[in-house]
Image (cartoon, rainbow, N blue to C red; front, side, top):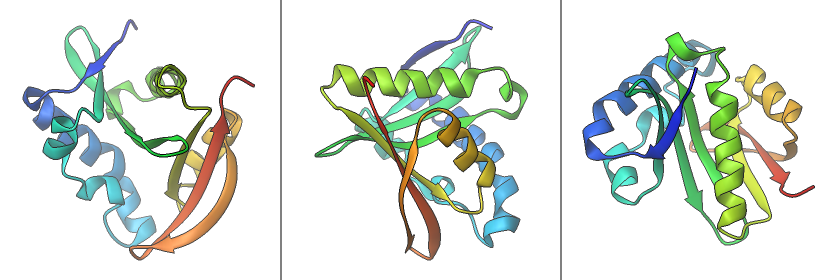
Amino acid sequence: MIARIRLGTLSDLGAIQEIVRAAYSGYISRIGREPGPMLDDYAALIDGSRVHVAETDGVVKGVLVLIPQDSAMLLDNVAVAPEAQGSGLGRLMLAFAEQAAAEAGYQAVTLYTNEAMTENVALYMQLGYRETHRAVEKGLRRVYMCKQLGL
């Protein structure tokens, strides 16, 4: 699988929304409501140059949302189309996020995920992210994580 990661455009909006819906809908029963990424305004995020897409053979298969913050790059969302899950695309996008953060001068990438998404917490820990704290925000129980870059 050869993937290309590029900034998302409004012409990608439908594919982005479909990938997010497919990637997160399975968590609704665990969480009791739609996960945060299903509620985001992707047109506004695209307009702000916050969305990257991963495509293979010209077809969008992954979504990555990066939001620069004061002290770190926030990895706000990473989602992979069901048919591309397990292909390494998610890890490729995470590596891209870390590279983009380093190139922007950040020393860390932060993220948060719902504590019910235990497999995501485990994957992030395996990739070098460490839990910093937990909190309830917007009615969602979140696990906050951070990865120091260049270590």
